[in-house]
Length: 94
Image 1 (cartoon, rainbow, N blue to C red):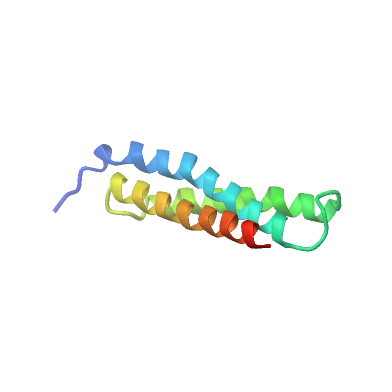
Image 2: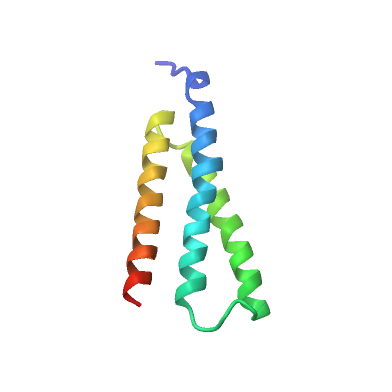
């Protein structure tokens, strides 16, 4: 059975590019906020830059493994909600 991929690739690209980037920002915000030291340390700055790129590319490539674009958007939204809920929840406590 052939699947029409042309109907889904645009939404999958959107999920990977936009929602993947926001997911990367959330992961890096958690890392930068909750690890010791401040952002003036050269090693921490470089690591945060590369973690954004890593999370972004992994999420972009992962979006193409979903059955359709709506599923990719839903899962990426759920991942973003979890990351940002943990970040803001822990930030309020700490």
